[in-house]
Amino acid sequence: AQLYLLPDERTSIATEGVEGGLAISILRAVSGGTGGFKGYVGEQKQKLLGFNATGGVNLRVTFILKKAVH
Image 1: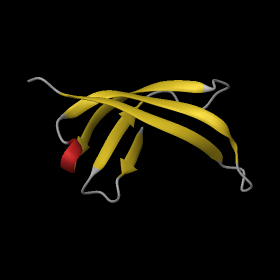
Image 2 (image 1 turned 180 degrees about the vertical axis):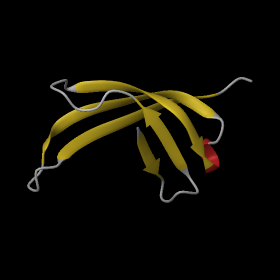
Image 3 (image 1 turned 120 degrees about the vertical axis):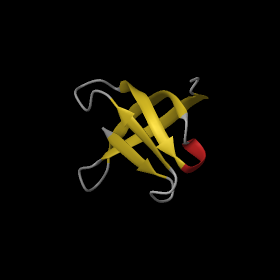
Image 4 (image 1 turned 30 degrees about the vertical axis):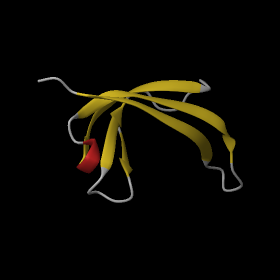
């Protein structure tokens, strides 16, 4: 699970899915959000761009969202 705070917990997007591995691109499910993203679901595309000087990863994250139908 990943939680994106945009810029804090009042506005966030939660995702679920596989993490890491050798894949350059990963597709994850958006399971919900708060604030302006409340009631939205969709997909998150995560692309590995490489590693930074501290050994962490550099990622490009793209969200594809739609309003959930109840």
